[in-house]
Length: 544
Image (cartoon, rainbow, N blue to C red; front, side, top):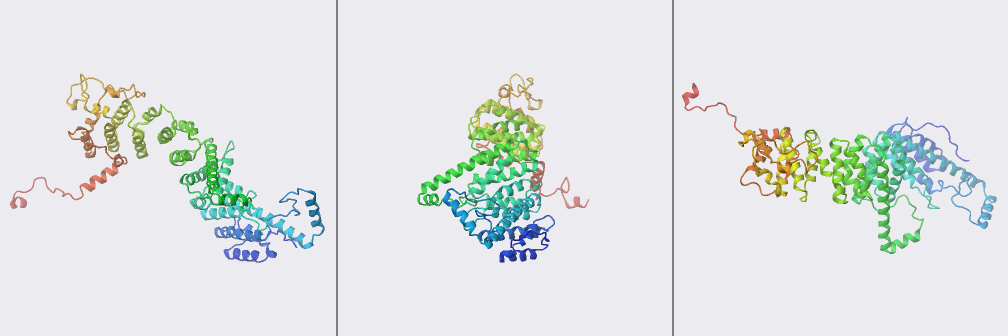
C-alpha cells in the first residue's frame, strides 16, 4: 500500500536522525520516515539536528532518485507528463499500457506521487531554514542541501529535478536578516566557481532586484553575493565545470566540442561573455535602488577593483558616481576615485574633476579618521606629469595654507607631496624661489611688507585663484614648527643641495600624533638622563 503522511514526532537527537536515515535508505516500505526527517528542519529542533537532517535528506533523495521515485511517469495520477504524445501510434501504445496495468504498478505510482510531495515539502522546509537561521553552519548546510537537491538526476531518463529548487534556495538566503561568513565562504568555494552556478545566481539576483521596492536585507544580501560573484569572475576563478545542466541533453554537440578544440574555446568565450552580461545587468538593477549608508560605502570602496572590471559598459555608472559626490565626506572622495578610473581607463571626459577634488581639500577632511585613504587618493590623482601648472600651484597653496593650522601629520603629508609636485613640474619651482614684488608676506621672514597675498583661498575656479602669482611663503613659516620631522622636510626646499629624487610619500601618509610620539620616545630611549644642570668640578664640590 502507498505510504500515508502522518503527524509524527520530529527527531530530537543526532542518533535518531541517523536511525531514520538507515531505515528509509534500507527499504522503500520505511519511506514514511521522510516525514520525520523533513520535520527535523523545524524551528523547535536543535542546530545539530537541523544540520544532520539537511544532509540526511540529500542522501535519501539521491537514493530514491536512482530508484526512479522522483520522476513522474507518463500515466501517473498527478496528470503531469514528462513527454508529450506526438502521434496516434504512441497514443495507442499508451492506452494499451493502461489496459495491461498491474495492481503493483498502480501502487508504485502512488509512492512516486507521495515521494514527490515530500520532496517539495523538504525544499520548502530548507527555504524556511535558510530564511530564519542565524548559525553559519545551519545556513551552509541548508544551502548545500538545496543545491544538491537541485541537481538530482533520474537514472532512467537523466533528467534533472530542479523545479525551482535553486530559485527557492537563493531567494531564501536573500530574505535572511544576516548572512554569515561561513555561508558566503561555502558559496564562494563550492558553487560560484562553476559557470552554470554563477549564471543561475546572476539571473536570480537580477530578477530579485528588478522590482520597484526591495527590503534593506534583500539589498544588503544581494550586494554581498553579487560582490563575491564579481570577484570570482574578475579573478578568472570560474571554471568550465557544470553542475546544473543535463549531460545527456545533447551528446552529439558535446562530442563535437571534445573532438574540435575550436568549438571548446568558442564555447568558453560565449559563456564568459554571457556571464559578464548577466552580472552587469544585475549590478545595474542594484544601482536603481536607494542604497543604505553601509552599502553606499561598500559599493564605492569596491568600485574600482571589483565592480567596474565586470561591467560591459562602465560609463553607465557615471551618473551614479556623479550623484555620490554630493553626499560629502569620504563618500565624495571615493566617488571621485571611481570617476578617475573611468577617465583613466575608459576615456571619460570630465573637466570638473579637479575642481571637485579642490573643494574637498578642507581642514575637516584632512583631519578626519579616513585621512590616510584621503591622502593616498589625493597623491594618486595628482601623479600625472601632464597636469597644467596652475592646477598644481592651486593644490600646493591650498594644502600648505591648511597646514598652518593643522596637526603635524597634515603638515608632513603636505610638505612631502609639494616637494614631489615641484620635482614633476619644474615650472612651479618659481613659487619657492620667488621674492614678492614691492613687499613681503610676514614680518618674521625679514622681508619688506608688500600687502596682501594674491592667492584667494575662497575662489573655487583653479585658473582664477591667483596661485601662480603668489609664492609658497607657508613653507618658511612651517620651518618654525615644533616637530623636528616637519622642520626636516622644510629643509628639502631651503637647503642648497636638496634631494634630487622624489620622496616616497607612502611613509608620510599615516603620520599621527601617536606615531610621532612613539618615534620620539624610541629615539630618546637610550639617551642618558641629565641629573643636574652643572656638573661638579671636584670631589669636594660633590660632597658640598
